[in-house]
Length: 26
Image (cartoon, rainbow, N blue to C red; front, side, top):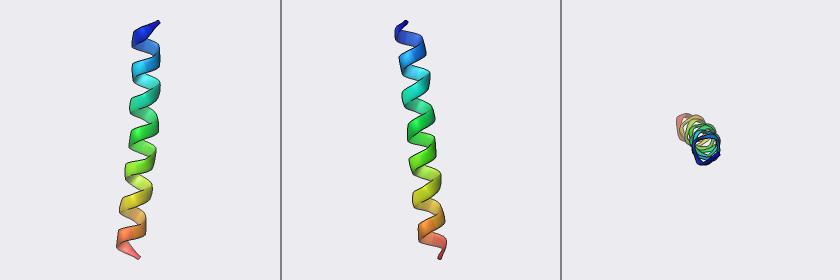
């Protein structure tokens, strides 16, 4: 259960990071 929550949080972080990178590019 913890593992599932962890991977989900990592996915969310990756999403936010990629969004921030896109914003910095523009």
